[in-house]
Each structure stands twice: as structure tokens, then as C-alpha cells.
Image (tube, rainbow, N blue to C red; front, side):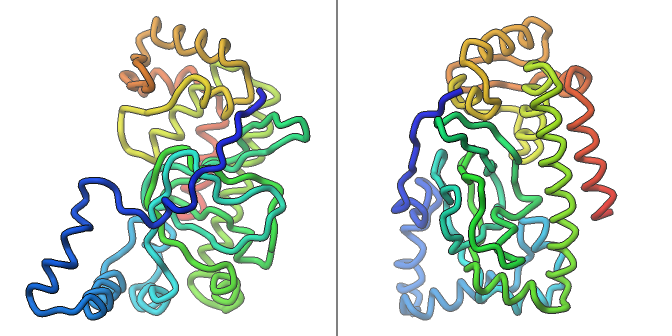
Length: 278
């Protein structure tokens, strides 16, 4: 499936989402006697104290997380934003706290297919932690998300230490490679229907919602198939009572049924993650 060019808007990365009250908090704090600089420092202090919604960061001992927190910056990533181009220098890595990021394999003719799905269980651009300055994958935001961003240099320095973070990253490296391996097998061996069910389940796992928002065109890019094939599969799944389709969204109504139709790749990837992290 030839993919359209969605380069994203890097100016949106740090923009707060509408309705989150971010524009009102600093003036309110200033009214209580805080200067903006003091408010920002106090916000950083609160970040250092609370556990992260990202599962890798949450597994760190509190003292280790507090030590790392000055290197972390909260950012918002809008849907379809390109975080990395293939073989471009990696400047940052991202620990998603919600939403979904996808690693895409891009061919010379522009066709693409998903290689890995990353949510709050993982890290987008793991190779930066082990000295990799580039990656063959394009990293694209599949479902808008918030994330903790860290510079590649800082992550590489932290990962070089004999520390809890290094151990966690090494375990996640095994889990991610397992997912990529099963994705390759799934793309080559299984039907579009099974692959679609796997994608729906993996996405739902990461956003923890029954409603998944995407277009048929976008899913065709993820699966590397024609848009018409996606439409046929979604229609079939709806007739089986597994999902309900709407304009730009799909509601999962029978998750157990989706799991039964999906291939073993979904189950085995989850089992390996559970085995590694307990």
C-alpha cells in the first residue's frame, strides 16, 4: 500500500491539548504569589515525586525515577506526526504515557507496513539507549498521545550505567524484538482478517478504550494492504458481531471474539512481555 506523505507539524509537540486547563494554571499560580519561573520549578518537583504512567518508568525505584526526572520533558504528540525519518539522526527518545506510536518499514517506492506498536508499556526509539544514532524505521504517531521525552545523549549515558534503568531497557529490548519478529511472520503468513484483529487488539490494549479512532486509509497503511481490503475485513468483523464501524472510528464490542479470530502472534507477544516483566 503506497502511503501518503504525513510529515506532521513539529510545532505541535509542546502544545497543550484543548480543555486541559494548561493555559489557566500559571496565571492562577501567579495570583497566589508564584512567579512563572517558580511555578515551572514546582511543576518539575511534582513530576519528580509522582510515578509515571509509562510502565518502564513506573518500574524504576522511586529514587531512581527522581534522579532521572530532570532529563524528562512532558510533550504532546498529535496523530500522524513523524517523530523520526528512516536513517535520520535520533535526537530524542519517547516514553509514551498513553496513545500509540508505530514503527514503520518504508520501501523505496513509498509503500509501508507496520513493524511494531508502542504504547505506555514501552519506549519509542530504544536503539538510542544502546548507542544507535539512526534507525531504518519511520516512527509515526498512530493515536495522539502524551509522552516523556529524553535526549538520546542522556538516555545513552544512563543506559551505559549498571542501573535499574539499564536492566529494564534490556528486558524491553527482548520484548520489542519478539514483537517485531512476530509482526514479520504475521505479515507474511496470516490472512488480512487475522492481522486486522491483532492490530485492533494491540491498539485497544494501549489506549484502554473500546473506541478506536482511525480511517480505513490509515489502517491500510498499518497493514500494508489496499484500502478496499480493509473495508471488506471490517465489514466482515461487524457482521460477526465483533465490532461496530462508524465514520472515522471502530467500537470493539466483543474483545474475546476478536481474540479468537486473531492469530497466535498477538497472544505470544503478550506472553513474552509478561514472562520478562512478571
